Length: 114
Length: 114
Image (cartoon, rainbow over all chains, first blue to last red; front, side, top):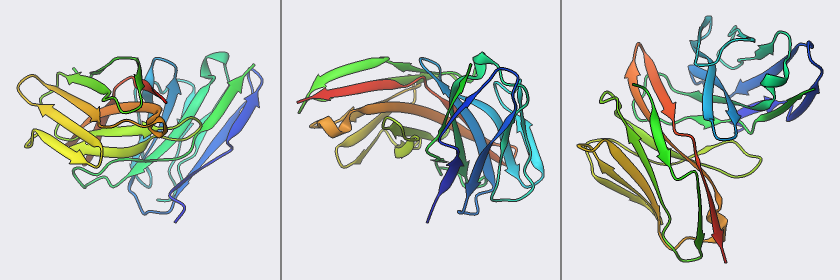
């Protein structure tokens, strides 16, 4: 029972590079989301998906793309990395249609953009 | 207003003390209030949650108190232990458009000293 798996755990990018953060869950959750965590800012929603083929923007979507081709996977793409994207990124999943069901988070990806 | 305001930002208590973390919200549509616990280098994990139809919920040493009229809720940790040292996030969610919409507080870093 793996839960939510994120890779890589750590990454250093140069400004302007692109990369994809991977997220996979094995709980058949319809809802998946990406958050970034910065000191004093809490968890801010980047993008989310309520099912395969359906994605939408969150609070801080600029500079990020997502797609959801399967229920299990929800990758986050950084198009052209900027130092402002240095952060810890968390993927989370949940049942969409169950009231009172919390999120399961991955262990995070610590990204540094130099 | 979707904000959830959390205080304090950090908290230091001695072993055996009762740290209290407070959260306040504005949106009366919120109907689920979870707390998450995050250890360094890990993702947040669901700790305890409450629905607005009850005023208190206990799970082990963790208690949520909920005041619907004041739109406030708090987490109390009884007989705190050094192993409780972590960052705690409150959250509030409501169900709309087929999925939960969640707002997180900014987090409280708790240190329990022996």
